Length: 490
Image (tube, rainbow, N blue to C red):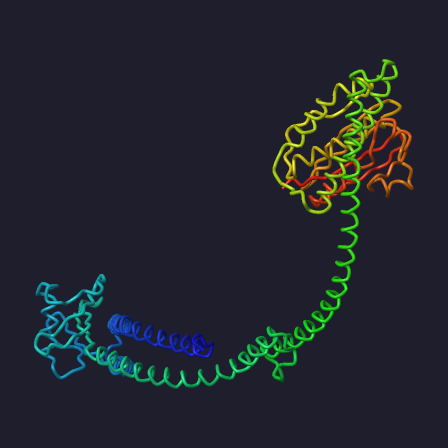
């Protein structure tokens, strides 16, 4: 595989080891020399302190001091010389006393030259620590020189030339060890990662077979790692998918039967509505034609002629209204009508409709109440929403009794708005509540006939609200009825 996890494991591990070795090499090359210099400087300062305290205490000639000084000299490879004010040697650690003595006096009387590459590392009250290169042997030293508290002068120094060789040798050894470690670790990690990726490849093959709906493949690993747990879960998933697909096929078969039944019912409904619409259109046209003829003077009895004309035209108008509503309902129920979701102000829509119906409510002596609210924006089909509200409001006008009050309320909820249209009057009988949304159902047929109701308005409301996937309903009160519907705010 081009992007094998096994290869990625090996490359990442080898890369980390190589980076670690390179970092160690860089740190070794950069800081080991500095650390060595600091360590030598501390050793010289320690030797200076020991000898200075010995002179102050008068213990220079004791065996205890001699042993302590010898340990310091051997441990840190320090050469030293101490002279009194008359240039007489008091302490020395080497046979080249003249060279050491000359070097000591050079420090006191010759000016320090930084151009030669020598560096002063530290200056104390009575001493100076510096790194210099011996002009005769070209050997680099760290030395401390100065004056003890009793006035004696001194020079301690130790060679640092060996540190460079030590760093070079250490880096070379680190490189050899690092290459061997990377090689051996690479081989080991390839073998170890292979044991990890083998079950993953097995799970990959199982998942591919599952994708082809072959659920016979099972993971057979018996380890207790996370991969084994994943394998067991895949086995359970395979069984669950097999059962689910079986259930889905069974349900699909049943659904197919339901769809066929529904199609038959839908065809019957469509045929019914089409037939009703077709049969009503012709008599409507004839009634309107004869009514217009009568009104033009075909009948000599003017009073009878006017009466019959009014009746014919009124019935024709009612039938025409039924046809229009049935056609509208037919389009909604069978998906021929597109619901266009848009954002609009529901408060403005309600106010505009109430204002347009003001003449009718005033004629019937109905008081309309609607709180003056700021704009409330909703997402819905504005034309259909107005159709729903107009149906509710028309019903309220036709059924308003008693105090003759229509109370329109807008209730804002968390993510939706409920519009309620209440009218005073008789509550709807409980046994009729579940039927009022059915086509042609009329609670009070005599009263419905009186104001020309078709029994289709609430069916249109139902179709509209279901097309927008929103809730609607009716609530009975002691003094009236409230129809409501909900719209989304976002």
